[in-house]
Image (cartoon, rainbow, N blue to C red; front, side):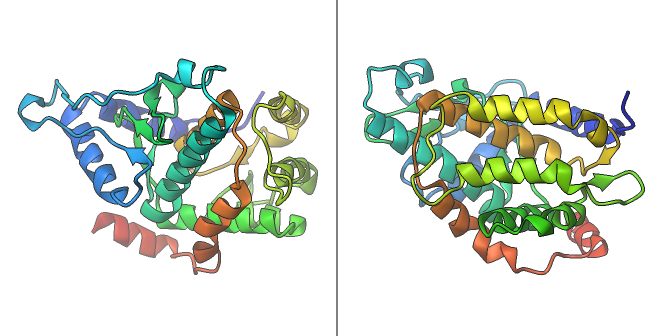
Length: 275
């Protein structure tokens, strides 16, 4: 039994699904992402073929790539897989924190790989525009994780819009185990290797089942649905590549500028979104 209000989640899902079948919208997303990531040479976004694109047909240039199943095989050296992993990690964080426009379908099949270390990103039907206050909230959470400020986590979740029914902050019996797990991934040395074993995925499953009763009345903003989906998919893709990288350093690069920023009030956010 759960007291979670699923209606905002269904609304979010419906909006993203409707966007998936609008190819003119997807073409515009491709143009936006191309401009945003123009100075990231390791991220390749195939161009839209304008004369072959309508609301029901999307035509893009062909860019030859190594398919993901082959890229994650023993055919390619781990050093190259690590580079691909770092590119995927940087691409996701840059989209979330800097541009606040997220490629929100992290299926491994939506990426292609090249021997020069670059990654091709396909399928822009499912995109998530991230409100400024949500991006700042995630940045503050990660900043607290990096600084091992366990006691701050429940209140930071509440600021982000994650709390129990009635406005009560989450219990540290719920948040502390997740903090411990994430701090292991974000350790400075040695760098964490995704896919070394299934510890992280087993731990997340065990934590979810053990805390089900405690989490049964949690409230959270609908904007988190596709953000968390994207981050979870990213972790899975890094596991398929068995990637090792400077995860902590990259996170600090994108979250530090936001961690001390004042979050806009709800009225400010509403006015900005309406503009």
